[in-house]
Length: 596
Image 1 (cartoon, rainbow, N blue to C red):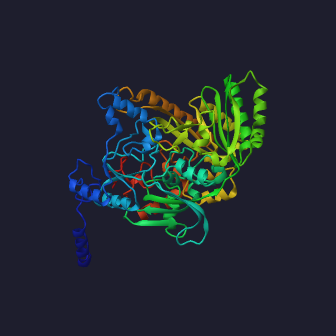
Image 2: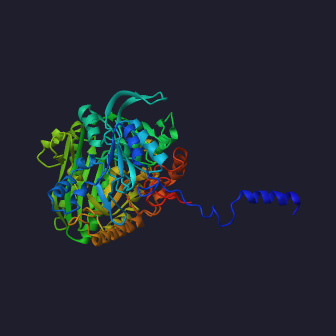
């Protein structure tokens, strides 16, 4: 070796660590826990408390009241309260679900900043970044995947940020187009938003079907409501968002300013790119009527049930596969079909006439099909759809009221969502079903898969959560979001799952883990049968399997690469972490240790 080359190599060697030393033994980056020496001191927490106007809360699970005995009076009050989603919304130390077998358990953060302003959020983000804390964001707390719950963390709780403001004409910052809109702070829920937009002002905003879900979280996951075939997705309705990013900056994101962040917020997943503190959504004209169709049919044999599935899918393709109809058809393992559909833009006669062919077909085979609940079709003034006073006058029990003393009259929720508060999940799965499966040549394959799946576990078809059949304009608007493009040509989102009401650690109310795991296995087998008809179907991030293996493709498809780039731009150090969120593959399962 020449002298010059030798000296150069020697100099390089002195700059590089020796084999087996600090580089190979480098410790991965870790967030601090309360047991760590670097956990913030009491004085540092007090400084944060001062910065947020005293709104720093030391958290304790409400189930602490059950620590001694579940028969204690205080425990009984808490367990009863946990049946009320409004109680849970007001409780920063708990989430709407109690957990998921072998996955997660609702566990409070150490502290919460009960944010009442964007500046409170900025202070919390800066503190978490500077002190190297695990950070969690919670609004409505409806995450099935446990993303709004983490032990040893700091919680940003946006529930108190819930102002709703109507605009006859709104122009996004830096843009030129003006349109009717509503601005909603991130802690608001959809029931209160609908009440303001529709009941009070006669307009429509696309939001969620479960009305106690948080506004900001739904938009960040994509956002499907009962009338998404008619109005598109909530993410596509976003005009502008205020976002606090990991550097503590308050950014206004829209099509003209911060367009990459704006696109990512529209379906790229909540708690991932920053804390969304405020959203502005376009409002739409109401049709004259909204309505529903509900009924239950039991097939008297397996063969008759297969025929019923086939007839229902043929009927759907012919009569319901359009922008007017949404919500669910449920196929149960006991050969029962439940009809739980809603419609927009039809009157009573049009809706009734739509279902007449199915009624007639069922009546022609009385020995094969028993009508357990006659099909009821109703149309109501669209402005009354979320009006608590209207539903309380209806003889049938359609809504449940918040029964706490002094609760606002507008605090209602659909009776069909009553099982969600305090649910303990066993298994879950979803798949967007391509519209090609409705073609004549493919329907038999679809029916075979549905029947085989029903032998394993029941499932439901959520037609409003697939955009095939919607208008071209709504499909194009959704195309400009981060949601998996599979939704654009899906006629429905198939969902299957198992749960019960249980509370881990509460004696007498603990989940039956053996039964839960057995049910979870049946749910997986059900999804295996569905995959035979739709082998590469994507899944909806908000309603999916905690253990989804190929989650990047499943949740976001071809959009994941672009989402990863946005994540690296706005949160290069990974301050924001959620299970199976964009960039989470770089972290341990609990979000505390960054992989080398």
